[in-house]
Image (cartoon, rainbow, N blue to C red; front, side, top):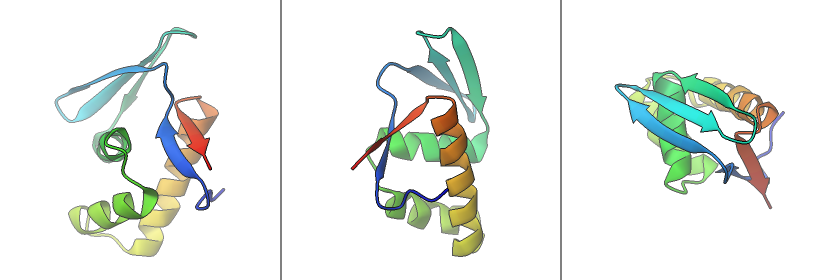
Length: 92
């Protein structure tokens, strides 16, 4: 599900750190730990910096040598997964 008219933000109650190329995310309220892989960690860090979706896409399309269309689909899927796990919230 595309949410291009809304701004994704990290959920405010999370604790996270990077270890090597992975992000370790703890949800204290529910006691869950998540680990993101390399590209997930890249997106997570850009979100943490306050980057907008378009800026994230621009930064990653060159870094991962993929097409803009494939990258958009991958980001949509990733954002949906983060939203379902209450790791991402949406501002208008």
